[in-house]
Amino acid sequence: MLLFPLWLGQAPVSGCGVSDDPAFATTKEHAVQVGGGAMSAPARERHYLDALRGPSGEPIQYKRRGSLPLSAAGADTTILDAYEVTYPGLPQAAVLYFDAYHFDDRLVAPKGFVCAVPFALAPPGPDAFRALEALRALAIEQGSAKEFAPVSLDADGSATHGVLLDSFRLAARAARAAAAAGTRLDPKNPPREMLRTRMIIVAYPQRCGDKEAVAPASLELAAAEGPQPRRDGEIASGEALARLLPAMHLPPAAMGAVYLLDRPRVTDTVRIAYADPACHEAVLPFRYVNGRALNAPAAALPAGQPATDRAVRVQAVIDLDGAVQQAVYTGGPAALGDAAIAAVRGWTAEPLRLNGAPMPAPVVLSVKFR
Image (cartoon, rainbow, N blue to C red):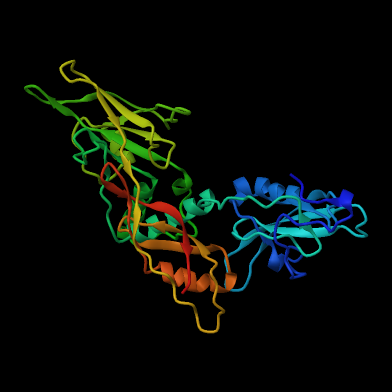
């Protein structure tokens, strides 16, 4: 419902707050923080603009002018989208700037504008592209010095039927092999092969009745919902499997397959059939257990900063030990960004688990100051 009673000659009542800073939205350094990343930001920008009106409730028209990078002192590079905005009676088009990688939970209209309705943009989750880069960098950093056990295909963690290696574990293995060979990988310039999103599932032989080891005859990852997982290449065994997973001890007659996923989805199921009918087909669903915060105290307000009840948003990765890694500022009072990042580095969590094994998890953390 519009909130402008213009037919009564009254001043318009804005459906949102209005900034008193003339630089807000009209300069690159004070862009509107809508967030959402490359995939969602355009729709979020249009949502904001569709609610905007001229100072007396005039309908606006807008046209996207393009994108440009912005590197602010002490902040990471972001992408700005520029829009040309006009309304009846405006002598010259205004240019408004939108920040696609940061989000402010208290969106307001630029000075000289009002809103027809309140902005209703939900806080975005972790940006997918930034999360992939962070996970890859963390795998290279930690994998160079540490070995991570594979994930059991069995929900009880026993690995009776086999194991899987998600993208993180595969990248960590590659980093460890490179470090052992004296050629440490650069997280900012990883090998091209590491840029591919993939995981490997390995099925083990089974003991059936009095038979010691019956080899798997087929291996399939199936989805109960949504598109079926894409397999990359043929099912591998013997030397072909050894080339996929060099230096990994695998039982004879094991079988493996590469899938174009970073990890299994909740609705995915592994099906393994065996060469002897005495062995029943194994149907193995995946069991995820969400992580939870263990210690996340409020941050201390830096000296000289005014008190605020606004939170700072930080995107990070919870690693396999429950520590916060790869933290970057993604919204809220920018002056508190560095302090928020320093604070979350001391937070701890119970990590996400898949079949009992810890998994790295991209998260967005909300940091309050006391």
